[in-house]
Amino acid sequence: MSGSAPAPVISKGKIVLRRFHLTVGFILITLAASLWLLSPPTSQGMAHAAGELSSLDVAFELELVRLVNAVRVERGLTPLARSPILTAAARAHNQDMITNDFLSHSGSDGAWPAQRACAQGYVPYSWGACYVGENIGAGYPTAADVLMGWLNSPDHWVNLLWDKYREVGVGYSTGGRYGHYWTMDLGAQPYVLPVFVNEDADNADSCRVTLTLTKEGVSSYGSLGQITGVRAGESASLANVPWTPWAWRVPFTFSAGGGIRTVYVEYTDGDRNVLSSDSITLDLLPAPSVRPATVVILVEAATGRSVPAWPQIRISGDDCAALQWTAEVNQPWVMLGAEAGVAPAEVTVWLNSELVDLRTPGIRQASIAFHVTDGAGQNTSLVAPLEVHIVDVLYQHHFAAVFHDR
Figure 1 (cartoon, rainbow, N blue to C red):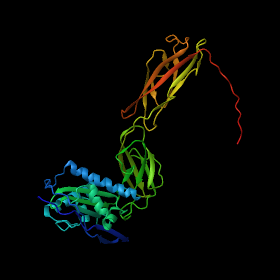
Figure 2 (cartoon, rainbow, N blue to C red; figure 1 turned 120 degrees about the vertical axis):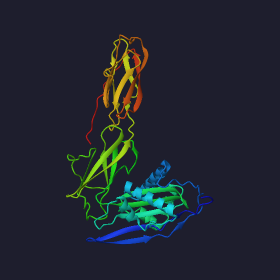
Figure 3 (spheres, rainbow, N blue to C red; figure 1 turned 180 degrees about the horizontal axis):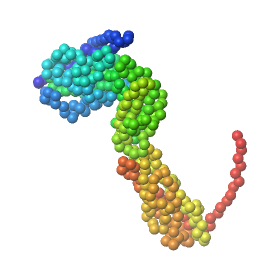
Figure 4 (cartoon, one colour; figure 1 turned 90 degrees about the vertical axis):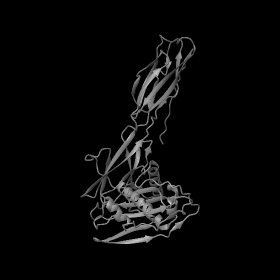
């Protein structure tokens, strides 16, 4: 294909809503007007072989999921969990539209989004149909572009922000009449209640995170009913974890250590349980500190009396990480009560008068280096300077303290 591609277009948006009375359901379909934008992209004629996915295609899909979730979270909704089944359905529909040169929610075989999702293995609700909606667009070269097109279309916007959806699958393909094809399938299936760590973030710099929970909003027939309790832990076995009330967002603290961490959440309605999980990479840089930042010792030349007599250095760190530390000095006359340990800790410092002149007034200097490592092997080094001020006379005064009750 050469020359200019047609202007970007989004299909008539399809949103599927079901309302229930006992086991009888009906489908309400809302159609959005087609939206055409200016400045069409140039056709690159770069179609992949049918079904072939490049790493760039996958990256574009993940970026659109990220952007959609950011929009939902900004508007007070839960994110959507990426579903391999919906992703497969969306990709297959893109290839169908490219191969057969059409742009529609109805496939070349007449199948609609819910039927295509069911055919891929998406689980239907008790009335026998899959709960799925779909947005498609063509000609948009980036995830941000197609999302803007959908957000500017009222019915597509409603579809993206429908609060009953819990999962999403995005397909991005190149080639065909428009050069770029996007299909986003959104849905929910019984007994699938995702959980999100820090709103589905990839990374966190603290073990203290927030879990976003979901609940069944489509139908309790053949699925979980009103949730009466949840419990969370770092093991799929939660038998010893107490139940707590359900809430949209709950705090959670991982045990010490960085790297990829997984949290498991179990939901119950009193009769049936659902177990979900989510993972996040904890980038826990050691956050140690030493106090005082500079160790100052006053020594009376005539007597060798020092203030403080037994100075201590406190090593503190982020209690999310298990911080192992070692210490070394650069002068042989500086002695430490311990040269290794686990933070938080206090290290006593004293001076070996046999190795340094403490009788001649002046200043002696040294340094104490602390090397800290967390459970993920990340390292930090800190240096505490040491100053020994040798003076002729040390004066010590005592002041009475007066306390007033308030």
